[in-house]
Length: 178
Image 1 (cartoon, rainbow, N blue to C red):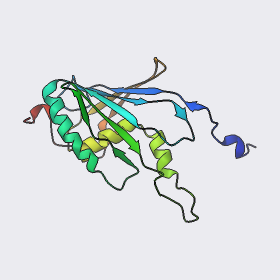
Image 2: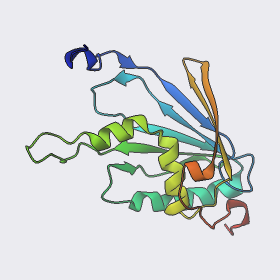
Image 3: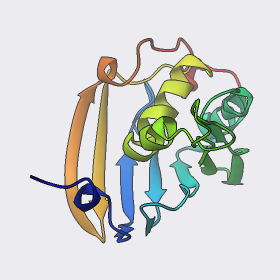
């Protein structure tokens, strides 16, 4: 029989992980992003997860404008930082965990469900869902992800869009006026 104490996570740090998502937006094959999880202790508050988005200038300018809509998501267990254009081909923003901000159970203990969801659900899924549902961006029908840790490939994942988001947006980046 395994005791509860032996099932607790150790204080070993979670390794650094990178998730690359090439061509997630419908109609644009040369625009993609990378989510970078830095290493941290399992029981530490979650660190911000930066997303580095790269692509050609015209759709990147429009994407940066539309990503402003993600800042308006309210009342959730996370938020997005202000998107910043580092150049005309690079935008960066970050996922910020807010899961432990004031949430408690009936006995006053902190609620950890949202924390666990933010920890185990890839930020890539949250970002794509918010792009489709909040910014109304049309996503590709199939989403590819390349997961790596310490410069070694961990997994190549290909998922139909329906496995990530319920509804797709109606805005095409390449068809929008800047």
